[in-house]
Image: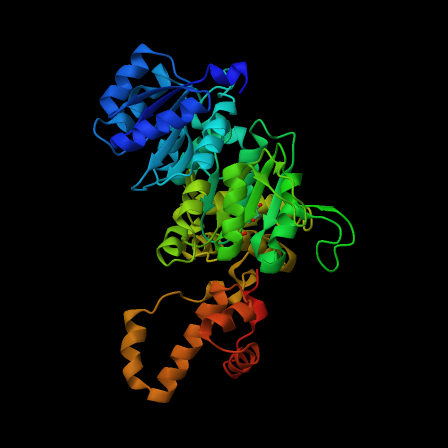
Length: 466
Ligand SMILES: Nc1ncnc2c1ncn2[C@@H]1O[C@H](COP(=O)(O)OP(=O)(O)OP(=O)(O)O)[C@@H](O)[C@H]1O
């Protein structure tokens, strides 16, 4: 324990006396100065009268510490990080989490080593720099010009920019959820490049691309001869994110066994390469993304609860494009400008197309919009994009009208079933952006079976691809 650590003062607040006493004892043994209090009111009193470097507390205990920290925290104790330790987990909203200064989120019972690792990490995190103005001092104009790579002026996007602006200055783990193509990777990259780690690597780790049996070796590296084919020592992807950010894309697809290995690395900020004995320390910020509802995956027993809370200390849910109002037009114009380089004749978008864009559901979100504009610019013969330049599925009505329902009774049962089958397949192709394997998997068919069925209905999967 060095001098600097000796001086660190920790305020521990918890309404379970035994837990409070043992945590205090353990952290004192590790060299920290600890003050233990049984509720939120006592914690606030301590905070007002003594200086602290860290708060360890549950937010759901007597005395509303959470509310007071939100109300007064940023003026009175702007830089004290907070580690939430709770038996009844509930994630605060993203903006609450950043305003509270939550550095980590631990579930009881907490192992001593995990607690210590978390405390060390929170205490080494630099406080937000004074030179960076916080969002309070920024109007939304300034905010969107600060993040030119993130287009959007709708209410949910402006809120999101505020969170990104704040979260970029911290070192906290972030979980980004949202439908496919909503910009999860763009946001992750923005958090990295506006933070103190921007000069180091932003390492993308695609969880769907790593076979379960190779997870440890790909992530942590391996020693020569540790398995057949390991012809030399090899560094893993996590080493490449040292001092930088590890972006785990599609984290919801990670098998249980790999989740356990990742949890250890996140908790301990360390890992052991396959076939070696020594522990490698790594200083990494974790940003994860998924288009699954991870809370639902936890409830279904497919995703570890402890990992979910560990990675989702700040949880950002990206809105789908259909909920971003006229951002769709803003984005369409921006993409048009980008692709005008390929076809300078096109200078605008027709009113019918704009109406169609506003009505359309955009299952593939911004990625789909970008592809639609690229395709239309390439196909268009006029000076502006017309309805006929859009893919056929976009031009089709998207819901069954009452008239369509009443007409059902006028046709034979076979025809009705056939139509339903066709609508189902069309919806599947839209959902999976024309990916036959995924559509077949969802429908419980083989790829071949899906091909046959599509051919029978005259459907062409390529038309649905972005
Ligand atoms: N707000 C935005 N402004 C401008 N372009 C955006 C924005 N959001 C996303 N994009 C663009 O949309 C495309 C998809 O973005 P991205 O890959 O980040 O989505 P994603 O949610 O990570 O997708 P997936 O779930 O399929 O991995 C990219 O071309 C990206 O540049």
